Length: 128
Image (cartoon, rainbow, N blue to C red; front, side, top):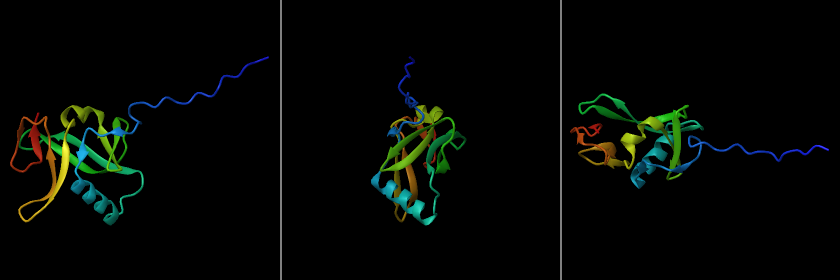
């Protein structure tokens, strides 16, 4: 008589669980992201990539674009939009909000980062 063990469900890892995003989109930013997805026909399986890279006049620059999920990414959701972020960027982006401005003097996405110790005039570069 042999007993069979019940099927074991795979335990989700922290890189595959959708959870509240450490990067928040304002309503205006989420609306603009949805507009871009529709107008540019961003394919299924792509999400909004938020990250940082070295460079810029203050030391680091923000990354914002559409991309497929990568091996070291954490996946989050905000306003029902999939957000991908390399887990190594979390230190620099925790608590950041992304807004969208559409005015006469400025147009585009704007990052409000509580971790930034210095920013530049263009708003796309910071030091932490």
